[in-house]
Amino acid sequence: MERSREADSLTPADRQWWRDAVIYQVYLRSFADDNGDGTGDIAGLRSRLPYLESLGVDGIWINPWYESPFNDGGYDVADYRSIHPRFGTLEEAKSLIEEARDNNLRLLVDLVPNHTSSEHAWFRGALASPPGSPERARYHFSPGRGEDGSIPPSDWRSVFGGPAWSRVPDGEWYLHLFDVTQPDLNWANREVREEFDEIIRFWLDLGVDGFRVDVAHALAKDPEYPDVGEEVEELLATPDSLDHHPFWDRPELHEIVRGWRSVLEEYESTVMVAEAWLPSWERMSRYLRPGEYHQAFDFLFLQSPWDPDEMRRAVSEALSHSASVGSIPTWVLSNHDVVRHATRFALPNDVDAREWLLDGDRSLLDERRGLRRARAASLLMLALPGSAYLYQGEELGLPEVHDLPSEVLQDPVWEDSGHTHKGRDGCRVPLPWARTGASLGFGSNGPWLPQPPWWDDLSVEAQDGVDGSTLELYRRALGLRRHHLRGSDRLEWVDVAPGVLAFTRANGFACWVNFGDGTVAMPPGRLILSSGDLPGDGLPGETAVWVQLDHQE
Ligand code: GLC
Image (tube, rainbow, N blue to C red):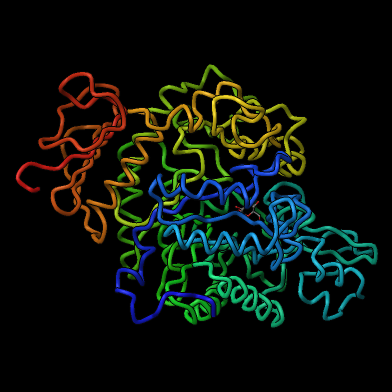
């Protein structure tokens, strides 16, 4: 083991460092491009570690950086132990891991266990082998239905659109819950399990602190492949039926997770965070039971509209359900799969942002309001007990780039959905680091997705050291959070005024968020931080404040 920290020198808080950590999601392809090929890389990330340190985050999670044909942004892994040349080399990855450690940054990598790429040696081997062979048994191959087997084995639909089964020349079908180039692995197969234990050990031996686990609610499949008979979306709205669902959130998957956890336990202070889109906190808490995941992203919080009652419910339910299994929530507002929250909050609550992207009707969009609300929501999130994940660029207040021309779109969702969903490219546009340059400081040449020219004003250069900028708001919030909120899980709601969400934490720290449009009275106490201007005596609409309550310093 190359890990340097000694077990005995760890304090209990250290062992559970993740409980209140803030992790920054690095979408490597769009973070910083060192070699000028238009794509972000490890060298670019290494050169920006001081930026992340000055931001005040505790660690980073890096999206898949492995060898891959990149049909789904790298979530189609061809080799789990190698780095894609466009990102750099394994040697560079090792240097990054060391440097992150030297900068006191934890480092998580992405584990993609539900499917491989169709370019993976295993899948190539499966295609070259006959039906019924051990090579095919690592995936879900099945004969079709109907006299000539030309009807797929079941009615399952791919998450990206179209059928979830594709046929190979000898007549068998294989399952892919995502793109046709992402065949699903068969987790009932012993070799699959053993291989992933070794992949986990490979990265932990290199010194990473853990894994974000992709589509953690898939993995197990009903071996009979029964028809679903309903659309995925409808199913997610009816939690009870999940107990019997043939591929989502099946009870057997928890045993797989416990296996991974026992591998992680061979190492000190490691962590696993589940990406599981689930319809209720009750279902989510099952992933957080002792011996399973340390963390699970709270996507129900992410999906809450700008509404104090819904947000309060989301926070309360997450806290109580996670506490019931001895855990704590993991908050997130944006990531590489969803419309950025500055844009979600710029749309009316009844507009589905993902649907809206298709025509991007500007008359529905109020960008100033979106940014105001996004900044308030971020202060709310960072004041809560638990851990939080930030998505690169949210600290700059970046909106979704909703008007990317269809010719530049790369997300398979655009094609797979038959152009009914625009996909996720709009939240993956490369970061603006400078006011000028071919890619606003991202690299020396044009970026792989075009940046809006007006992002010069949102660049790091434009915001660095500027009082009131979103970047400085995040820096201050993260510093204050460390100082005031570390080590306490306490939260008490306070009813102050209609439309205002207010709570206190330890030692007289309070957060008030005014969801309304009008001004309300300020909380009594000393103002520590505000998400927006405070022109008068009161707390304006769509603004959050952090205060130190009187007599409780
Ligand atoms: C996860 C990833 C997403 C990817 C999908 C298939 O949801 O976050 O980007 O497309 O899994 O791997």
